[in-house]
Length: 192
Image (cartoon, rainbow, N blue to C red):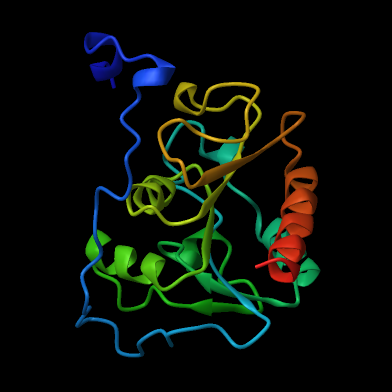
């Protein structure tokens, strides 16, 4: 984490050429391949709503099942796919979210799933960084007191040009974030 300081990295010198990772073409562990495209008029979105519960800030960065349910209910035109590791430990799989993680064994499998999505929406987890490194569209659901790498007072990221941030305006206000995400998803479906 101290490499940017050691390399004297500034905003204008952040190495942000993406993609710098590539997903494998075939993923043998996935029993049911993801179809090449979502149903017409629908948006295929990979969703991660919680991080590792043993991480010290997880209670501030993770969504509750009720919060995820509110997003899914507000977006009937979206085809949500779980990219959540161990959804049972994180409140269970929300209704209306397709489980794609049952056969995933490593990040290469997760990368292949991300490649099949139109968009990834995630709290601040490794999936955000993986989607950004793959150059895929990714929306970060960011807590009010976010990690230093996401900077302040901006909704983009110099690290990942394909990333858009939706930050809490007050501590703990995930419903406000999710309402803005629902509006943005509706706009994305109307203006692909």
